[in-house]
Amino acid sequence: MLTSRKLLLRLRSGSSLLTPKPRPIAPIYTRAISYYVHGNSTPRSKTGFTITPPRTIFGIAGISTMAPTTSFSDAVVQAMRKMYPEELADKSWDNTGYQAPSFTGNEGSTTPTVLLTNDLTRAVVDEALEKRANVIVCYHPVIFRPLKSLTTKDPMQTQLLRLIAAGISVYCPHTAVDAAVGGLNDWLCDILIDGDKEIKRTVAEPISRSLPESLQGQDVGYGRAFELSAPITLQTLLKRLSTGIGGQKYLMVALPPALDDLTKTQTITKIAVCAGSGADVLKNTDAQVLVTGEMAHHYALRHTQLGQIVVTCFHSNSERKFLEQRLKPQLEAQLNGIGYGNALVHVSSADRDPFDIIDVRDLA
Image 1 (cartoon, rainbow, N blue to C red):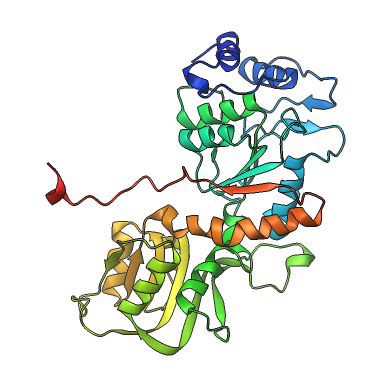
Image 2 (tube, rainbow, N blue to C red):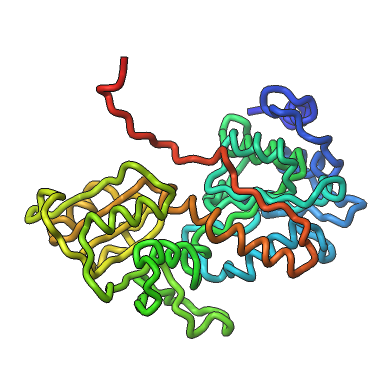
């Protein structure tokens, strides 16, 4: 593990850890990183930020402001929380919210810029630096569990350190977007319903915990199920899904024993969806077809033995196109309404699912 002195020298120098070279580090970042590596007594900067000592690090959760700010990063987060309240997230395991702090060190000199991404990778961070983004909205949390140290040996922590050094904040909404009305799972429903607005949707896994009064009475929760007004073939469903998520050429389909050939006619009316990994959310559904990003072997086997069809498209492929089709215009409208009509909202072109399908017959 790097010492704090070596870490800060590398953060400042633009060495291989920080390629391309970031903007200069404001003093507050230096003090924050130094504190979390060594656990010094609580420092306070002249900018009004106080760094409080947590027992473990959850993102950079120990940093708070003395007074409310009006920074662009905070405006983005406020807009996200308005559309997708964090109270909807399943925080029994999920880690939504700020994962790198909101400082104003890189604001004011460039056009306010947001980068939307499904995952945070080195390529996405390179893109954020190139576009001079102020904030990244990353659907998946970068940190799920508390950290006892910051280290460049971990690739995700390395990318967070690069962003902190450049003054770019990171916000992760994850299951808040899944659960909200009009969120990610409703977008998947829209793809398969194909314009029929009369179809009623039900929540596969309703939220049982207490919610704020503003959210009570809404159909919020994880996963969705619906019944089509007219049956369609499995082939039609697969084509709708492929087109809706961006023209993906390959889908994985687990068929029940009674339907061992996709060319056979199979009419479908009852469908359930869950973006990402939907095994737990969809385990009790009676739908004919379960559509999700990925499902483990034994879960898929169980559903096929129950006579159900499982369709998967790789985890993040069930989520990524939502950023472009729904979240980008939603966020642009929200920012325009609070005085940031000049803001740029980009969808990452570097973000991609880690898996590819390879036909070994094409190999040399």
